[in-house]
Length: 109
Image (cartoon, rainbow, N blue to C red; front, side):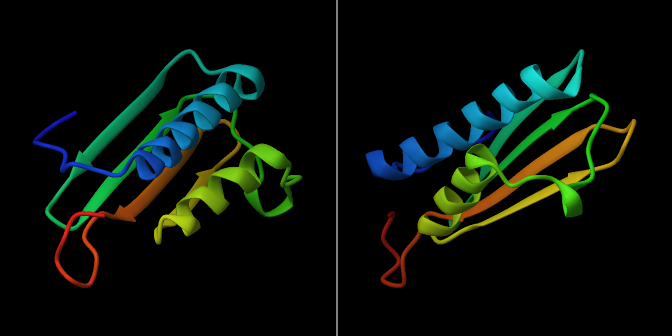
């Protein structure tokens, strides 16, 4: 973790941790990865989360959106953020999320 992470509500922390947990679990179970990198950074408005592996990748467009992938997207959306999954055969997978931490009033969520 680089920089300081703003104080967050427990529900937002739980959502971020579950996205990380599911991404890492998927990489261990399905990708054949030998390396998984988790990066969390923040600015005054958003958390940025990236989980990257060097596994065999998959076709995101034709992947069965099981409970794990669906839950990650739901958690990011519930937190007001976005989740993006990119993967290419033989080139690994990248899961990235941007989650706002400052509400319209300027206070930390």
